[in-house]
Image (cartoon, rainbow, N blue to C red; front, side, top):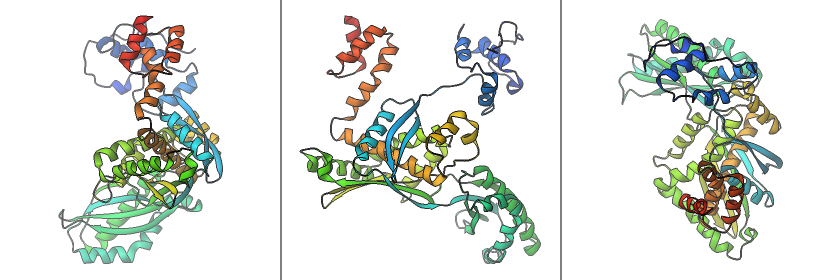
Length: 439
């Protein structure tokens, strides 16, 4: 299988600190962990998660640093997503019980009611050159205004390939922060990055542009700027997608449909006026967003940060979704920033990320934005629907039952009988424990 033995490894001195850890082999790293941190025999757990294919294992180990094993998460499918007329089976990676079930339930509900309709509001991403400059603001403003074309031309070596794909630098503007921080300015550069997420591209262009800008500004004014840093922003309020669902209230197939949809609308409204509720409300929406982002090799941490900043863009943290019931028509929509890519980076290096994009019929970045937003909306819809009807715990705990039974060491036959028993009984940790004690 290509696994190495840990029997004859260098004898490290017992010490909880170490220098040069990154230079050790994987076997040596584990040996050091065994001496200082791991309980006896627990290193075997690390080995169990290695791939038996050495080449395959090397791919995973090169994703990060100081790797000693792989951490597995469930890879699931949420079917029946009708988005802009196309039917998708959406891959989702999450460890939280009921997330995939909720997304699937939301997708199935709206499948018969027209599905999800989306629109890309914009697809611009932003990077910034932060700098100090001791000259007069009016001189700097005039310099930027008259040199924008030369700035763009100076980066052609880096931007030419992206421009052929429809991307490149879109705008360059100056932001003056000297009123709150002496001598501090910022060059705000907006980009289109085609089907790439574009982080490395943006950062490369910013650094190249900063060098040219610094030399040119110094030559023209005899005042040299101090470049503080050049970095993209994960806040992308100009790279935004909206997903919407809509149907007649009567199509909810419920004798109390008007009462139910009124409660639903009020529940979403509460998330718009109460930050405590909004955070949990948006967390539920992001359960779906993150799961698809991870499955497709996109940076869910950047997406999370940008989405929550967007939720607070008016100075108060609010719901990312809204709901109306007007003229007998129920409408729910989610609007959020989504900077994602379908080429480059992990999307092509991780075998399952690559497969996920193939499963989604090789979408463009804008199509992936629409898919991810729709899954987030489906997740949000299903969660709010549970809250205003049966309550969130009933479905969540039933799906969590298998985890509780595994944790308590229930045998296969006892677990099977427990599943049947709790079809008609409330699931809780204590209730499961009591049931197992009686067996």
